[in-house]
Length: 505
Image 1 (cartoon, rainbow, N blue to C red):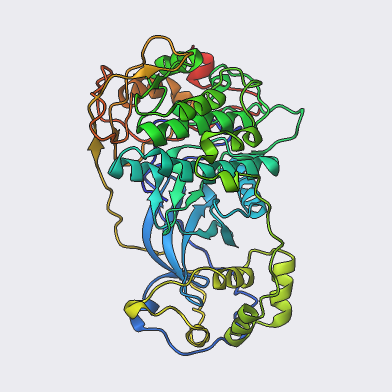
Image 2 (image 1 turned 180 degrees about the horizontal axis):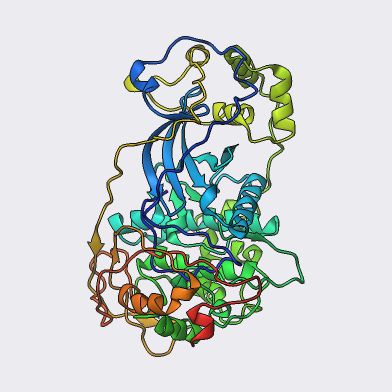
């Protein structure tokens, strides 16, 4: 949920004009029909006047902005009935064309399908004529990208713990025939307990065995070689390649493939050559060789990866296995009783849960089952205090949803290099990464601007490094400040590609 986006990205969603850039203007929020629940009495003990002055949407008090894009903004919010923190993504539908709207609704549909402890959970969908609000799990630990910038590369034990969670979540998606297509450090979030939460399913899609996908998505440094070649693909294999890049980044603090421009990066990815740091274990190196395989057919499946030796070091008694989704718990009487005291009817609670409505009823039930927030004095919400929380009046007409300015952190971390060995399949050395630089988001580019974009990319895209504890020297690929990967939207109809990687090289 960062206000900044990544290393320049080749994201061409199938005809998806989804962008993520600064310049978002708060959409005018039109009058909407009152919720069918509005006349049902809640406990009316008033909240403090300071809280009442905060803008709100439905049952959510909006706080600071934690992410911003062209047509969307993400705000930290608090669910007033339970006190739980959430992230609310506010999307201005009036700025989206029909194709982009279709992709947005597909993203929502996919998020509703997913229920994994390491995937950001969707709680509620609120829609007005002009605006869509997605209420999601808030990952207070921020991005893995930012963690690496601040702390440098991870020790293999720590990287293993994170990577096991990532693989479990991605394998779960594949099990449900969903491919993410934009896995990268910026889309991996951390919760308060430092557990992984995979976010941003804007480029995700459903796949069927035997039917190839032909949309070319992904951040260039994380993109599979077949995407650079403009080939059709099954789906899961492009995620597997991205996981290889992520593992390398976690353990080394740098990217395995990089270049001064997209053409150079493409050539390096297609050669499949990367450095192996001297401190990387042989087991980790061997796992990378299963993930970063040029031939997608020979790339390991995640079921195979789960059995890998490195993945299970220290976990011999609990080898990583595919996640089994538990049966939904719709009969927690403690939660239901609390909701009844808030004014919800038992029948509507049951109806919302059985039919997975993702409305205020379902959201309240789910949030009551989440870890309670800590308040001053260390006291968490009790059932007594919960029923005293009043539901705010509808504020969807409020078009001046201002929030405190969100400070943008700018850091640039570089490091010194020591001698490294090469992977068996590596050829000439690829210069190590330089630095990850924290900067505001870069503008996404439409297809007709691809020429300017490619020139700009030569300036902005370069070897990048996450602070690696003085073990790498600056790369010869010296250039201006680098940006985190940005997402480049698709520019043609399904099955076409007019990105530089396909048309110019």
